[in-house]
Amino acid sequence: MELFVFVVAGAMVLGGALGVVLRSHPVHAALSLVLTLFGIAVLFVAQEAHFLAAVQVIVYAGAIVVLFLFVIMLLGVDNAEDLRVEPFKIQRPVAAVVGAGVLALVGLAILASRDATVPTVVQSEAVQEAALSPHDSNIKALARDVFSDHVLAFELTSVLLVIAVVATVMLARKPRKGEHVIEIVEGAGK
Image 1: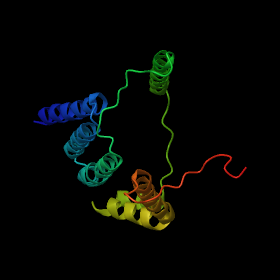
Image 2: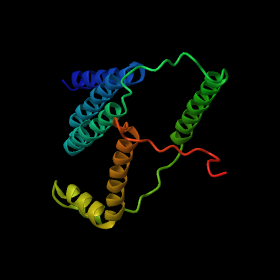
Image 3: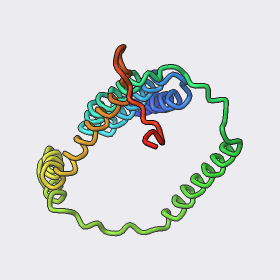
């Protein structure tokens, strides 16, 4: 049964990832991303990481993809762009060389890490406390860490996301009939 769940979830992840890359319609690509994220959540459940699966579905499949769809529909990019025209003829060969270089570096890192020794990690008090206490203490330790030690970063991230959404709305807003658009012309004051 575990093998069946792994194969089905892996097929969901790979199919969704291919859909994200190969779909020309942005909304369909975003929905393929949802399929990928649900497949990853199933893999988390198979590993008995239920909290991570819930976070995966709620935060990523729920909030982030809805934000993507909101921006896609707000900007009106639901029409497929013609990507056949390349501004630079060297763009694809350079991308192939860079991709091959990245794959070579990943391969070298994997080969180098096979012989490396794992250093001992000094754990924080919260991690040590979570390891020694009952099963729900890791969630409490995570909440304590995020909402006490890193609360400023957490709040700044939320403010940044709100600013990004407001800026997107302002940039995508088309002037109504009767509104005047102020254009800045270079050298108008000369």
